Image (cartoon, rainbow, N blue to C red; front, side):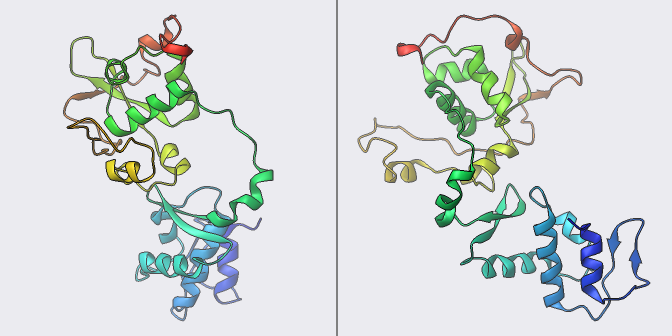
Length: 253
């Protein structure tokens, strides 16, 4: 695949331009470049990217006067009824197969092992209650969890270690990651469904106990006032290295 800078340079004037910085790989657009040309450049950047693109990357190839948000909105509208759609995920932009055509590519995907019920419940607790400690998770679920349950979520990359809570023992706190947002098609954690949405989807019993509620998920990037950062050389909490008994749940959950 051509270098993205080379692709864009060739698309601007068709001839060498004194405004091109080859060493930095940055293209300064000729004043004649219009909005349509800007749209083509944004589209080229998205097509060549192997991962979701941050706004800062678009700025490398566009003049300071370009309205990148408006360009992305235009492209998103242009792709709305096509085989691929332009979507915003975790604050970044990417081209993704249209949802109604996903069945066409189903044969091309590798079937993944399903998460256990314990892992799914743990992931939901982390997503909605973050930052949480191991003890928080066990209190909410009402059962002890095995070391392996958190290990799986950490290895998949959907959960990460945030910091240590400022309480006796300084337990490790957990939160969700950008990979979690990307996998579930969320722009931010607050986009998770609320109580009424879950009931409408049939995922919760219509006759819930009085006072039952679902917390509003909070962002997982910044530490709260109750957390201290992890030590620089700290990779896993001590509890994750200790042997533990199997998950104490009915039916071996």
